[in-house]
Length: 539
Image (cartoon, rainbow, N blue to C red; front, side, top):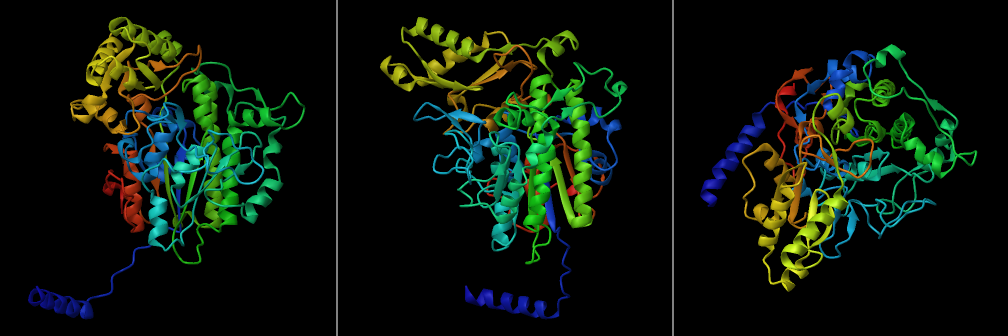
């Protein structure tokens, strides 16, 4: 082997001695990744004409905008969507199959970021199911790879109104801060640190969350701007029955635009406290910001509502202010910005059926599972054939199946056929189908296959009809389906030195973000990344 290697090495050395020096491409000083929780692409398009100059419009005019971008998996909820952004992976790989799922051993519901080995830093109350670590995320993130490539010198900070929004973007080695509903603070957990750095302690001491007490959320625009919207204009007062800021008040803050205002305010404090974008090692830093309030507004009133409309306009102005701040602090020419969402949203069923003439209803999962259990008991004479469920996943009771000397596949198929006969159910996939590779042929099937994880998902995965969803309430709406209203989300990338501005009609996925950023940062892609580099938008 040596006689073949030595000439090659000699040739390489000879070429290296006379080769021109390689031009170093400039790298961003800061990568800013923004996730707007629950923002469907259609709202960006529908309200584009009312945006100001410096927020969404700046991204649309100066950045690359992929309007056919999707969260391309079948269970479109917050935890799954946030995991996709910086891992570039689908749930079958990254392991986050929902906000909650059924533990296959204990048969109890577990939360995606719960970890009872850790608690929130400081005097914050930590409940059993609170999110405190990324232990259940099975792959690394872009931030982890950036820190690895820079010898841990790059700083990776995330902030969100939800713990899962911050933790699942921070990955294994970043540092997340999340809103504390009981105190109104932003805090981290002992998985990441024993105590907060001085800048966080100083920020908390100023009690910025109290500045909104007694304020009222009123319309930003003239009343005529909301013509055609559903429901009343915003007139939401922030107060507490106790007469002073307390837990109920801090919870009300989450359902108002002021949560996002506080999130961006804390992000500013992080930029200054950690000196992000001015890393003394000369390496890029990463700041992840997940803005949670839009999701809560859309849940309550739907994307067709005046409240959702107004919230998005307010968010637009908040983003403009944040970009202006970064321009002065770092220079936006040195910042690479990505904005996307974790999922979209359907309309409220009453609006879909009454105004759009699309049949839409809520399916009560408790009643559905109760009726399924009753049917299986009648057929086999065995009680409680369904162990547990967190829709769209249903877990069968293997002990009861074995006691009845039945095969799992038979029970799966019988249960699936019964479910398919129920109103509002479009399709059902079984564990046996997934394990045998028998799921495919349609886009919906592909998205559901990506969403199914062998160890964590159920024995049955149920897909509703379009615009139907699992819920027992009588108002509002919810997401989680594999249909375009839930999968089609904004994907905007802006950075003067790296990105070609324009509207791009090419199909793209949120899992493309991590490979694209990895390429631009010259770092290894995250382990589970399956997306592509968005080369058409690169300079």
